[in-house]
Image (cartoon, rainbow, N blue to C red; front, side, top):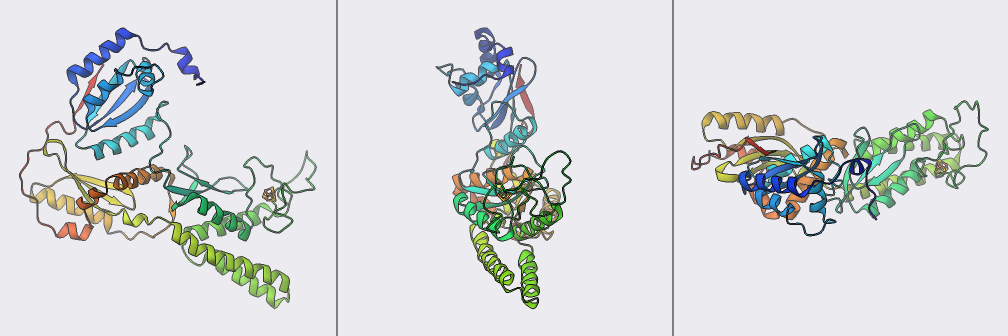
Length: 393
Ligand code: SF4
């Protein structure tokens, strides 16, 4: 049985008279063209955001839901008002829908699952005893560090386990109590036994049992970040140095352990490169036909829309567009696996779009090829309503 939120309990469902009035507004004012709509409750809360390439048809479908348990019926019964904006295309509407969902986090929009089945990310949690998690997308906390996207959550999970073992990071529950060696213990006795066997078999530094100081653990976290970032030799360089130093001190057992860890990391580096989705493939200039000739050009780099422009109809518009293209594509960007949390949803959205509609890639051009193309013929009037908004109260 569905558990009702406090807000739903406080707020009675919208009555039939108000629903009829909302439907009347949609019938009278909404056009069948691409757009984004917002469902608002009586106190102005945006409870749901959606998009459609046929806005009017989509909105009217909410009023035809037969059963109160239908998702559409639930949404419309929470709203007393619908607002909408038109956009030149379904693609532009998708981007705007994403922007509004991230801005308002409407209660009835489920967590974004675009392409979540296809990709996994590695998240490094915050805190003194950080740990790696394999996740499908970004959470609400933008401050976490993410790496990816990777194909195959299961295989990535196994590789992360190996990485934890090689560098001694914990992989226990997030709420496992931690006791660093240098942590003052004023009120509690120091735990005598670790939370699991990994400390005893030397696969974890043992921050739960004073097996390492906070600084020692942080140093391993730094190595993990370097490794996942793929910036350079990172932890391999460090381990190689430690191994050689151990050999010189005739600590052959320790040197052998370090040699095995090094081999494991070298294998893992190749694995992570193999699993990683090349975000660079989502870098191009994408021209999207718009409603009534309002065609738009989207500048996409590394899975994110970095700019958009109308299709130029004059030399001055073309010059402005080419300057934008240069600004977006010319700066050298390091091919890092680290992806800012706030970019993950857009990256998933774009990859999902081109996966669902592969023919759309035919409208894309590499930036340099695009810049060399002549101006398109001035054969279409732009839609005068392209950026105007309409709403029904
Ligand atoms: S040894 Fe302790 S810190 Fe390490 S994984 Fe086990 S419970 Fe966690």
